Image (cartoon, rainbow, N blue to C red; front, side, top):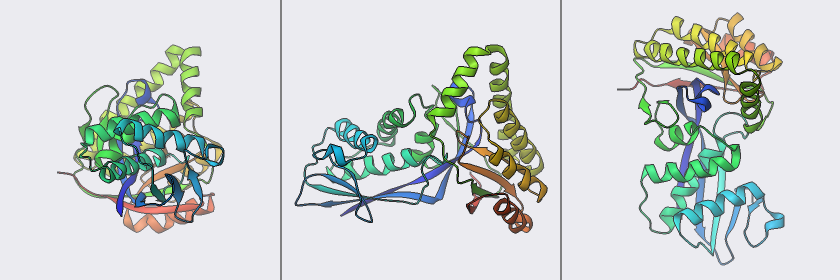
Amino acid sequence: MIRESAPAKIILFGEHAVVHGQPAIALPFPALRAQITIRESATALEFRSVNGTLLAAPHLPKRSDPLLLQVLLTILCRLRIDAREVSVLLDSGIPQACGLGSGAAIATALTRALARHAGRSISAAEVNDIVFETETLFHGTPSGIDNTVIVHESALCFTRGMEPLPVRIARPFQLLVADSGDRCATHIPVSAVREQLQLHPEETAMILEDIGAIVHRASRALACMQPPALGALMYDNHALLGKLGVSSPLLDDLVCAARSAGAAGAKLSGAGRGGVVIALVEESRADDVALALEEAGAVQIWNTTIQATN
């Protein structure tokens, strides 16, 4: 029996702008993970959830999730292995279409587990390349930030087409991650921003550049851990994402509720139009902010500490 897992991720700053060449800062979110378990099976290759639901089976395409089947077959093809009699079980605590990198986490754990099953040694770079290919199935034109942060499981400043840089975090800080309960496939807001860029190129490009400038300032605030400055940048980033049209009334309500309850900063995280809001809080205010988020409509809230980095 082989087990592999991979974490969720949080985009701290820079979503959407990162698709268009600007930097973004993202963090692993290890409190939520996707786990893959592989066992030998007397039957043909099947991909199931832990409750027994059939997710994907090449020999039964009509009963399979077509997207997950494509992911499975893509990974097998890239690894050049033929897994004929294997039971693949998925146990994921990462909500889907929520901006937390569910697809990339599943593909990362699945790639590593299948490689181990085949007796293959596989580098992080190779895993990252394979998972990026699966991300194109989910999102069309991903930036690469989700797979990179999840595969390396470290805080990174990511710019498309460039080597990711480690993010210096001087001291631990606390985030609340609030699930709005609304779901929106990533490719929908990504396509909307691309269309806005085509229709209003100068105005939209300026917004994307302003988001990129926020990322640079946020890197400096993290390096010396200045919560007031970091929080103000989160509110600014959220406002710019609103101008891109990727927020929603509920996400705005959650950000406002967090601010009113004393959060140092808050913003949507991920593609938007649903998914999660993140709030920077002091420990003494965490319960108040969490209650405010719940009253504003959050269906689930995770409290996580982001650790300092060397």
